[in-house]
Length: 151
View: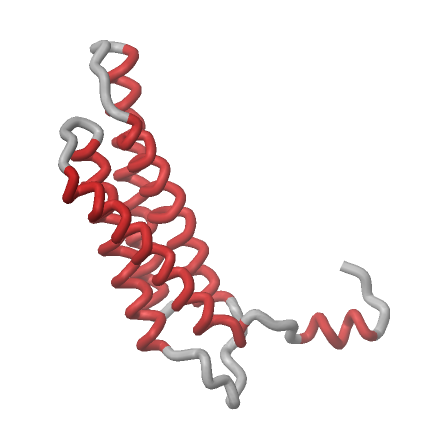
């Protein structure tokens, strides 16, 4: 397993822990202490788990598991994959912080930050899967299917 894969997977696990801790905080706040919080905290929790943990785990495993790019693949670029990693990591962490703040304090500039980090998450996912497109292909299964094997 090469380093970029490890970065995706370990960062995914860090975001999962952050999401779980946020969920416990929300549960205690609402059910034990009767504290309130804004809907932005629910969104922060959801995005750190789904984008930060689940999507980054999928990206890391795909990078590790999918076949090597074909020799003529002009899309696959390890530097683009690393850029996508940094963009999605920073955008997800920053979005979480901004949404956590906005759950308690209304700051107009922070709302713009939430929108910007959301766009950066989309950009990172687009760059990643654009670069990975050529690696999403049949290898030996296409030949076995042609021979009539069922999966």
